[in-house]
Length: 315
Image 1 (spheres, rainbow, N blue to C red):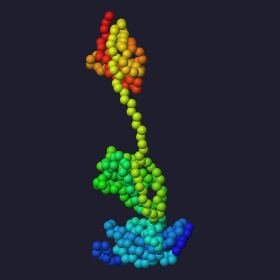
Image 2 (image 1 turned 45 degrees about the vertical axis):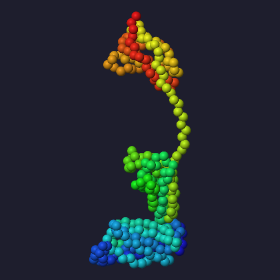
Image 3 (image 1 turned 180 degrees about the horizontal axis):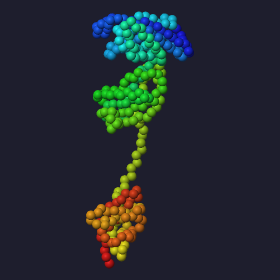
Image 4 (image 1 turned 60 degrees about the horizontal axis):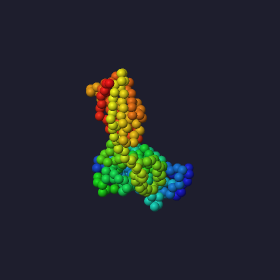
């Protein structure tokens, strides 16, 4: 049987409620459910439908053959509230279309109508996370896999176990990404965040996604810089209301000097020049008091060792 764009396929199935329920609990009367299913806009070769009734942990599954444009049959189920799934299969046993209707009330003597809008069947997506080249693989026990707004959490107990899983997804295009975690899914235990890309899932296919953390080579160059030696022979002289400092240059390559002043022993040293000082003499416009020290500044801006703290001398 072939149905093309805009064709509607209707199935009518009479489901009767039985007088003995699950676990031997008796029901007083029979109930009826009228099931309709429609497929539009897509061609389909329908061979049979599989209808599953679920109530808590219990389920009942029945196969109904498709003849012409209809399927019909009688299924006995206990009255009560059921979730019902219909899957339409082709002659090769491949799922083609499906839909689910929840919380269907089957009551004694009161027929209930259920309509399915069958969409393309879900695909099975096998996600395999390859950590063979990941340097922190020995710490990874958990992964979060994102299919758009849908989140799947994968775990393993030991490092010998593979990290992966199988996910049933409706067909479509998904934004896909993976995050790796260590001992828990707390953000502090997240060890890697993958990039996002598009994953296309086709109807009823079995898709394997082989994912591995993106790795890239990194070129590292390191230059070793020693701290400049302290300037030599610092002289601090009082000149009226100013303090004059002079010193010999540092023997190392430097970009200048930084001058430190400690007004009293109860205060730390502070830097008195806003920018690196280029010369080897400096005038501090403060009353001569406290202690002074000078440090050379390396070419990359590291302060070197300071001179011995020196108090001003008075002529």
